[in-house]
Image (tube, rainbow, N blue to C red):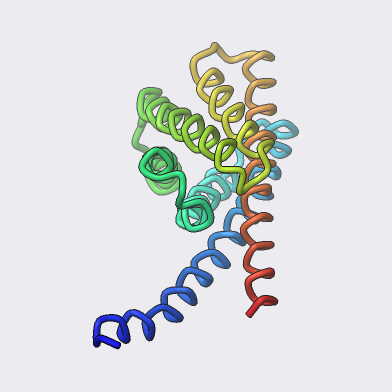
Length: 200
């Protein structure tokens, strides 16, 4: 046996453990993110979302999503470059949203409408790509991919329509679709780590 082969064999368990750890952290992050999104939908619907807790919760949700994206890739790497591109778009959209929410919390800077709209556009592109490759890969339930796409589309539409009842309804449906999608991704990832532990 060559030194390269032996080194690869010895490194394989370490890579597997690292991948498993990534999936555990990411899976739980997505699960919590889904419930945070659900609470945000309920809070915005009931109170209008003016309290400072909403930007804090929204920023927390963005961080959780960023933590969960690598786990989504780890479970369906066969999606290749399209899957990577979609996850990058979701990550960029979440990062922009995180910066906007932090600015709302710590400064009086007016970011206007263009920056949040840019975040929604990246989120839409990422949601469509990731949702589509999710449906095709058949690692996660197909409904999770469809819900992700619906949430991304309605989220952008909500940002383009004037304030009113219709926009509020779009926000509610978009938030619910995104929340259930994140819970679906997280639940599947966490379940896969349990099966892996039992098999080991």
